[in-house]
Structures are given as structure tokens and as C-alpha cells.
Amino acid sequence: MMPPVSSRPEPLVERLTRAELHACVELARGCGCADELSDWRPLFDAGEVQGVRRGDELVAVCSRVTYGAVTMLGKLLVREDARRRGLARALVRASLAASEPSVVGVVATDAARPLLDRLGFARVGEVVTLEGRLHGDSPALPSDVTLGAFELSRAIELDRAVVSCDRAEVLRAIAAEAVHGWCAFRGPELVGYVMAASRPDRRLVGPVIARDPALGAPLVHAVAGMHDVSVEVPSFHWSLIEQLVARGLCVTARRDELTRGGATLPLSALGRFALVSRALG
Image (cartoon, rainbow, N blue to C red; front, side):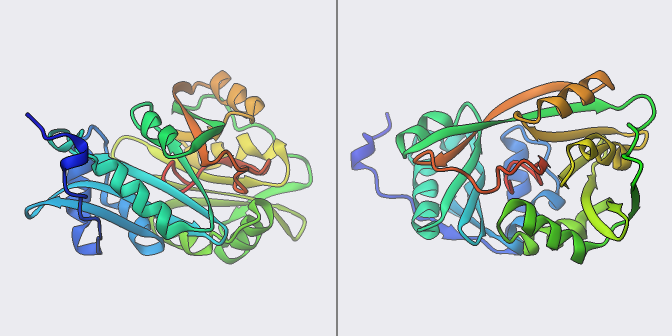
């Protein structure tokens, strides 16, 4: 029998290093995730990963990435045989303490919702995961817009203007993992961009940022090619979701986007058509 929660010692939460990359991937896969090293490298390079050990074994983790006044939590994972011991609570509380006074957001699984609710999080939106292979020709671009080579420095400037926070470090880390990227230009002006990372069975599309709603679907198509894709779209972009479903993608998951106290998440801008990832916002 497990001792009552009140009598257990507080778990020791420690900051992990890149030396634990393989341990994090192994833990994630043991929790049912199809993670690769490339999912975790940006979290270590641009953010912070905290963990709890049992002896020499890593049994729980949580990531934290800060964009100025915004902090995103993610990768809250606890090995099955270490659950119900307060490890997830200790990790989130440690992340919250390190994040003050930021607005803290998280894209939550159903399993994590009860804990996050108790810690003061509230629903502010929803993220829709779409997967599959796109069919047909790419939607037509506005006549004065063309797709060109990816330009990271200009994409970072556009991203900062659209989402009102600085994600430069994360975008550089993601770009190092990305296999495809496109920019949309209206004359000399950059008005949208997309990146996609490769997995053995699909391309992970995101972020997708654009000033013009008509660019969302063409940007996704630009990096999809003839591959299966996965993309995570805020639910208020219902028109983009409908276009992608009509062209062959299926909705495979819906997850609530939460913030501590229900404060507005600055990242939830109209120009954010797809997340970098659930962990990175």
C-alpha cells in the first residue's frame, strides 16, 4: 500500500541536460508517444527540461519554454509505474515557480486536465490535430503573392510582429531540425512562412504564420508534397480546418489550450495558423 500523499517526501525536481536526451525519448515512448530526438533537442536548446529520478532512472519530466512574458509548458510525462505519487504536480509547481510573472500556457491532454485545473489553469482555446495526406493541387495563392526560399531572419521578424512575443531562439532551434521551409512574399514584403520536420512516417508541419488568412492552406501544401503530414491548428481557424479536411486530412485529436488563471495567451494571434508543436506553442 502506498503511503498517504501528505506523508510522502516532496519529489526532488532537477534541471536536466542534453546528456538526458535519449532518456527523455525513451520515457516518452514508454508513455505511448512516438517521439524522436528531434522533438527534444529544441526543448533543451531553447528552453528547459526538468525531471524526477528514481535511483538512476528518469521517471518523470516536464518542459518549459519562455518567450518574454509567455511561458509554455509541455512534455508532462510520468512513467506508468511511478504515477499517483505527486511527481507531475511537483514538476508543474516547480515550472510555475520558475515562470513568474509570465502568462503560463499549456496544451493539455485529458489525463493532465484534473491536475492542471487544481493548480489554477483554465481553458482559453482548443487545438485540433489533423493528419493524413493532402490530395489535389495546392490552393491558389493571391495573385500578388509568391512562395520563395525560406529566410529565417525575416521569418523571425514576421513571427515577432504577428504573435507579439519573441520566439527567435525556438525558431532557430526548430529550423535546425526542419527539412522544408517556405516563405510567402507580396512583392518584396514577407507575409507568411512555414516549416516542417521529417519523421519516418510523416512530416510535422508547423509553425505556420501569415498575415493573410488565404495563405494558411497554400503554406501547408507547400511543405506537404506527397507525404503524410500532421499539423496542429487553433480551432478558431475553422476555415483552414475545413479546407484541409476537404483535401484529405482527418481530425485525429482535440486538446484544450489552458492558461494559469485563464489569462489571454498572447500567442493566440489570428496569424498563428499552426503551432510549432504542442510543447512549444
